[in-house]
Image 1 (cartoon, rainbow, N blue to C red):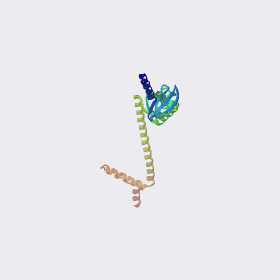
Image 2 (image 1 turned 30 degrees about the vertical axis):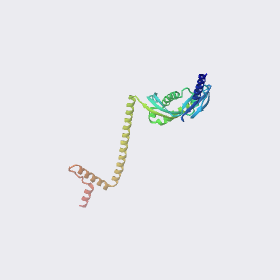
Image 3 (image 1 turned 90 degrees about the vertical axis):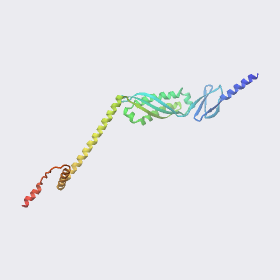
Length: 247
């Protein structure tokens, strides 16, 4: 008889212990009573009815999901491999348990298909130059679809875009051609500005013969300094005419 009492007390103690639950600040418990959802409890200490109530524990902290490299064909028919990272968290524990079987896998699969779909609508140059815009677009689509699951997608970051060797060489050639084009444009613009200045200077010299003679003498002086040679000065016709007239 005493053994039966001890057994009963032991079972009662186990039931009491199993009824006591303690959750951390970032945890919540979705409680089901006879299979039906009744409440969400936590954090801290609470009780459940053993054998009648069951709970599913949910973590509310931000989850970092790494999307494996995906093969994407851009709008201009370039094949690339793109990887990304998704940051999300559970904001409604009850919907995360009831509306979807495995929210972690569901978000991962949805992120992969959305990544391929969105990037496939853009050209390669846009993928490389407008990552911020693409990140925001993917995040918006994921957040809209996961709202029914009680999931909030906070950040999506395209991690890496890998190109094949042929495409890398083609981009390098394109960049080199662009640099050469800019150099030629700058050189042509410099020539144009120099010719415009020379034209203005020529007009000034034509209007002022004395300035032309001074420039002529300056040029001869520069030549004499650079090279040790004999310089023949042409005799101005105007001076000869004046000399003859005096006679």
